Length: 98
Image (cartoon, rainbow, N blue to C red; front, side, top):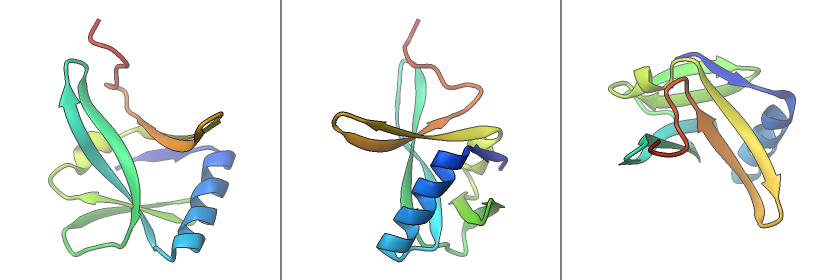
């Protein structure tokens, strides 16, 4: 896995990991649709079946069988009117079924 994050994403992830007393950010597939897979993140613990990459002091994990989906992924922190979230963008991510 090759994961990219910017400074605001790093700060938000480190803060959330500390608050929730977790040691890793798990990358996961949330579902599939016309536009392809939908990805997400959850704060979690590393398991024996995980592919692990560390970036800027943050451990990112994904199950071994899906880790290839996150090659050249970018995690983006977004803060808006209704709260904040982390988006997972990959070179093959599309926002619609164009």
